[in-house]
Length: 499
Image 1 (spheres, rainbow, N blue to C red):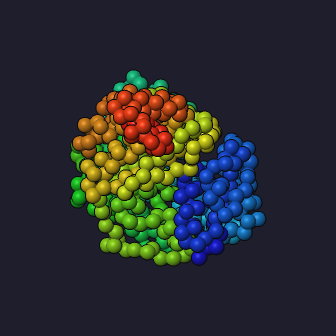
Image 2: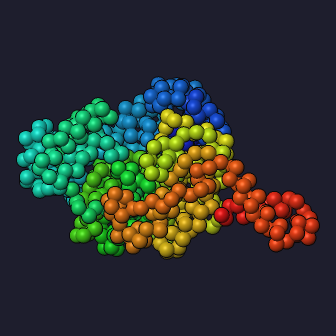
Image 3: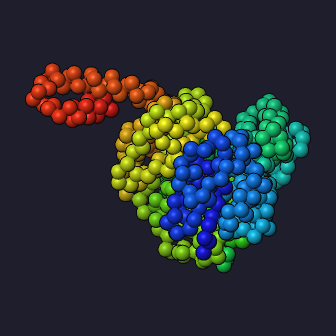
């Protein structure tokens, strides 16, 4: 087993991996930029090294600096988390060449599945259903028109190296095809230095369903069922749940079998996720892409299966066989994850700044993965997600009820947050029915008025406490009820929180 692991990441995922290392008796090494000097992953790790200025291309994306720290610190393995270097095949190759284990798939797996056209070709050979499309790059506008006429409108134009909604355009009419085609190519070039695009049929009632797979170095591959990731804005996930409320049992079984077959066909090792487009009308599913890493939403899979995915990543990378067989993995209950972001819930513009009060919810079956705390300054340089709130229940209804309660308890002041957005989604009848699609945010969502306590500072607590205390004093004279002044102050503050 490894003795020391470097985490080539930041934020809540770095904290998550450090905790797994500590549980396993493994020393952890953190790296950090100047902007993350006081971040929680730096404080929790056994060792921490500053690797450069705040911009990620000068720190978390600098493979030379990361590998230099790894060698000097004498680590056995590097865990890349997600984002940054996690799906960089060159980095994975350099890690292995330096004699350090990369906790993830092989560089070849990353190359093959990182390019969407290459991945689709491999999946077709493995017998995985794929969306009807161009079967290759679309080099000209003329060819784009030919493909659209062949597969029928609406169509989706996608950059082969795209991700996170970048380089993607939905076209409903012939007159919009040329402008959308050029926009997708331009975006692909700007974001990924690759302007190659392809086309596929656009499913009109789409759900985003993904299957968690896991493989070891001994040829064993299993799946851990599905996650529903259809609550999205501009292709960015907001809420995930497991299992999906819409996938029938027979389709669930089929999707799992297909994912295992696909992972086995490429000799996949470690944690990976197959993403499918699921037609909510026909109940058909089609391969979309594969993420060759741990997902942000992995905690809901852990919640319904009881499996520690990060621990298993480490064990598999060290050469161990999978801890369980397919028949050992069962779905128990239901789990939901809300991504808590420091951003304006109406414009979705990031809201960096100093957190004045941070009090996450707690209680049975409530989990919060985060890296921030009261007084922490959120930097402007990175993703605005600052926490993941996960709840579990025996049923979907119970998981939703726990999430509603947890969101009410969540105190975050000093910066704007999307907590009110999550509250609005969980009250929406379309969401509650489970029949929502990836078009939910555009068609069905109405955001309520922002919560007072998510947007103001501690002065509100003082005002609320004073008002509440004054009312209490009118009903119950202070000398009778509040002989202990600390009790009087506490009563007023708690009443203020219930405004």
